Length: 86
Image (cartoon, rainbow, N blue to C red; front, side, top):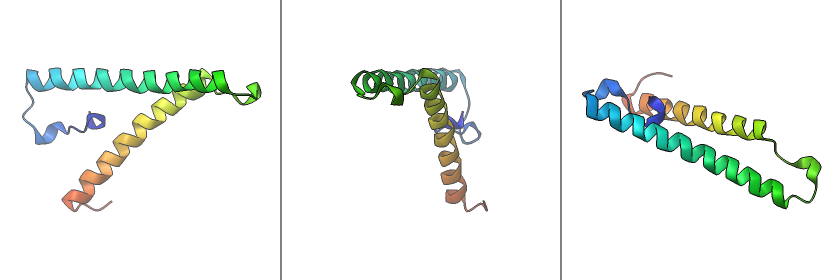
């Protein structure tokens, strides 16, 4: 759940927190894929050279890579804030 910006070791975990985390995760995941796939469709529609269009597999890769990049950045910030060695 680091992707959410929530580290459960620093919070008291209860049912309300889990419900919030699940809702937050669902909304973030849905908006990420809607934006990436929506922009892919728009970009492909207006491309003049159809050989350079972006496929849906590439768009899925971009979405997934963005999720991973965000969680890694969050972990690095938390470690640096705590003074831990990388």
